[in-house]
Length: 251
Length: 279
Image (cartoon, rainbow over all chains, first blue to last red; front, side, top):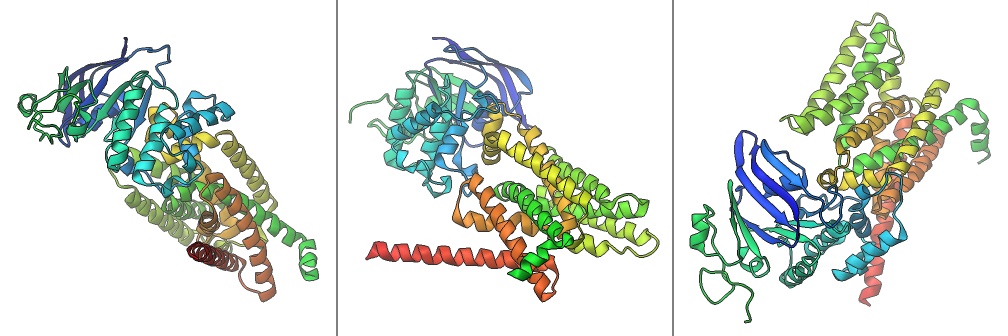
């Protein structure tokens, strides 16, 4: 168990508006954190800070060498898929392999081992038959799986998923979380979501983000606690006890 | 057919064929990039803005193509910069630069004493008057483009598809964006002599769109559009010679016919396949 990334007193702005203020968060190597919060509360900003797309106006982000990996590509990232140009001429396998581009020397081609790895990941996601298809011919859920493959092909030490349940059919949603549990054995995982109901069965801890970040060291949280964290979210319960989210239980 | 071979034996015509070949290669590559990234409007902006440089060249008595290249490059880098770093929306920025370049060109040509005899050549191009120097520049640019796209193919594809992810992987996204748009600008300006300001966008979009009907693989779109470009240019040149019509316009006409033919073939092929599957 080691630190992967540490956010110290981070503040971030969007234009003139302060989106995040005095945020502290440490991610350790076997964490499984659910990040929840209202829209506009700064969830995506937090993700962008961690993957290096945004610089904080105040504070410090420290990345540690974890699992013997270089700090360069230690974070795999599943962006929200709504922003893609799905008519872009690229095949499924090329999208997955593109995750490796920055790991390779500039002129190096993909090796057979790289391609095998990509096909293996696609097989694990149950979509290996689609590997030569243009990305635009896939459904939202299938696309999501392709991007997940791209994110984990480098075997990152931290995987961040931004709203992975958008576009995902309910059958795959359960599969997705099982895949994440499996991946969590070798990498830390952060899931950003507004659907706290399902995810809380799987995550170990919860971070509420609404300008400030409140870390909740358990996956059981009540609406009262959420309100106290300044994170007014309705909990959609999937369990028996109303307004409380419980650890994974047997139905 | 014999007529065609006789034609090729004329030096001006073989030079025109070479120019068409180089235009097809350079535009095939650059066009695939701009079509895939939906930068066609930017290409239009660069093309028209370079007219300002051409006019300036006339006025100051320097090579108009040099002025055109300078304006083309500046507007390309300017549009890229404005859309990334400022609040101005990209399409508005293009509109401003597009019309400002044209306006400057008109002012300078108006101020230039005497008649500007080659002006029409720049607007509509004339593949038959391409000089040896133009051909040499085109050969250099084509080699540069091919080399760049072979060496950095995976990075170009990655950045074009998902800039943000490439950035999160610490790839030099901005550097590549600037280099690529600069190459596009050079392709456009060098092809103005061949195809003309008004028509250059055709070489950058029609063969690519036709290719895109057949494949959705970036690399194959490049190869097919080069082939379509060459086919369309040669057919167009021949028709324009036989029918005594302007070559640029005829080439575009052939391009569009080619596009429609492929579209129809694809349509009936799909219908036929569906029909067979339903049986």
